[in-house]
Image 1 (spheres, helix red, strand yellow):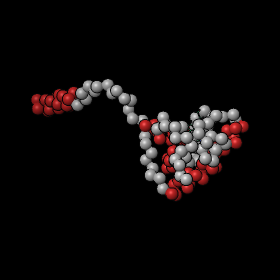
Image 2 (cartoon, rainbow, N blue to C red; image 1 turned 135 degrees about the vertical axis):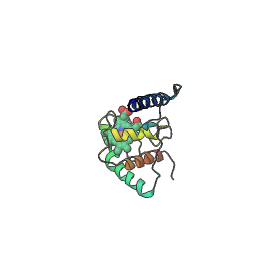
Image 3 (cartoon, rainbow, N blue to C red; image 1 turned 90 degrees about the horizontal axis):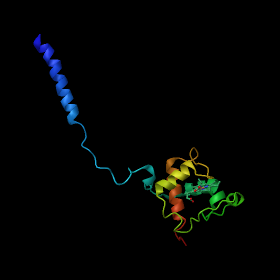
Image 4 (cartoon, rainbow, N blue to C red; image 1 turned 90 degrees about the vertical axis):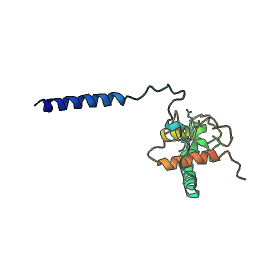
Length: 139
Ligand code: HEC
């Protein structure tokens, strides 16, 4: 009789002790905010197929504003009085991470419509590569 009463009691004590030991030690405050999606670097390796597809999407959905070559001089940009960055200049995106560029293409920003629903994540990463390549001299 005494044993059946004691057993659950000692079990409870053991569980409580274990729970206390599992408390994580106090963490020092991190100097940097936790890595977020916008800190991500492009996880998709460029392939000729991927870039060809990105070029097609660019022609349909982006060039009207950003211009065929990415110089920011598309017809719609002109008619909307938008001042866009010139991606053919190496400096234009130097302060943006791949993740930030991905995010803007995916979700849109200000006057720019989101590409979600039309493009898969891999397609968007290929667009990031395409845009980054626009400032590289190929000829
Ligand atoms: C209606 C015109 C329009 C279309 C279409 C458009 N954009 Fe934009 N885009 C903008 C504007 C305006 C901004 C600046 C947004 C801001 O900072 O408020 C922008 C910003 C960006 C940026 C962030 C860097 C920067 O220039 O500030 C990227 C990258 C970008 N666009 C890529 C694309 C891609 C890729 C597409 C096609 C899938 C696309 N855009 C389609 C108008 C457009």
